[in-house]
Length: 522
Image (cartoon, rainbow, N blue to C red):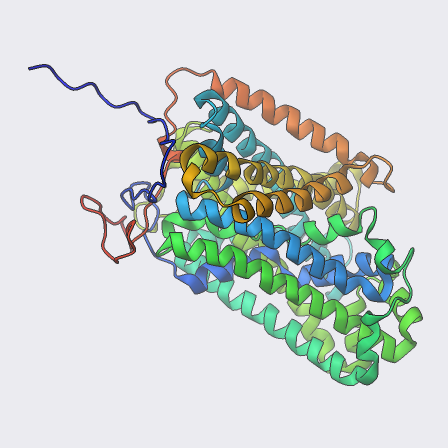
């Protein structure tokens, strides 16, 4: 009697029929199994999107181009990103892994060939590793500049404040996923409450001028014509971070249900907040200075904080609160981003893309300590380096880093969107739906693609005319690193498989698959 041949390490995906979501043991990666519920997942994701920062920073630029009709740009961006979110949600129902877009890319493109899946997944990870610290560093720099300006601190105090915010955020994340999610829930709730409350006040005080966004006044070129150029891509890029919860899949209860719902809900919530707050700000300025002049004042680059100016005019007592919430939004984003990126890095290290030591989680808290500290160090460099090397102030440095880092992150999302139809065509051909699995990903791809193109056009005003160079360098470096990784012998990418199954199992019955065990918890 002979022995049965051992199964391959990465069995070929089924090509016929509809496969049930696989259920693998929870806790095998060392992260805390099922420690976070839906509220925590949504809180971390909304915090990562930093709605107050977006309203303060992105809305004035869009208003400058579109005038009173700027809210429609955010509504259109929300609808477009909803298509992208539905596509990622389809992946999240099938692939449960803290590797997030890295795991999705691997699974989608390994249906073409194993080497293709490995190379593209590695390229997406290295692109995120290079670009992520820039965008998160921009948030930290903004926090320091905003807070020091509000307190009247000069010199390099902004840098000290930025580093302090980073240190605080790192300390919270090192306390564990429960601490991270609780802090994120609190800070997200504060942001949503303040934006809703202040918007309601402005709309009430505006009276009939609340209808200003229904007509085209102000801006250049003004109206819907202002959607051209960089305007719409900025509205799209302003909501980066909505896929955050996918990286927490091992730590979320019932991830096949919670992650897809969180991805979609976060786009709807933050997109509508952007639309409402911009509408309310325009209504407030229209009541105060007239529709056209008010929109021009809102979008004037020389006006550093339109919402603070509106608060000073309509409710001076709220001025300090809004200024404080601007700093809170940045800290919330830092906590959430560190949480997400450390999990992706942890998973990639377990797959061999970085030293294996970064793929270990602490026994007591289930925290990928090495990956967290790596990201704290990289972000710290991005806080300090621009000023030390060029003498740039916080406003200039923050704008540089945000612009240079956003496009590579959008590219990683673009590859994910392209991968879903391919993945389903190869694994679930009978389950393909023309609208859900072809049209919706196509719309999402078009929206993200527009965002990429708008940000890399070389004929933009400085420093935007150099963003394409940074993007090209990141893409080239990521490609080189991924090719090196893909050629290494003895690769074991099981960490990019299903990192965790749903507590409900494939049938959603609430039972843990046999032979599984929970990770250590505190």
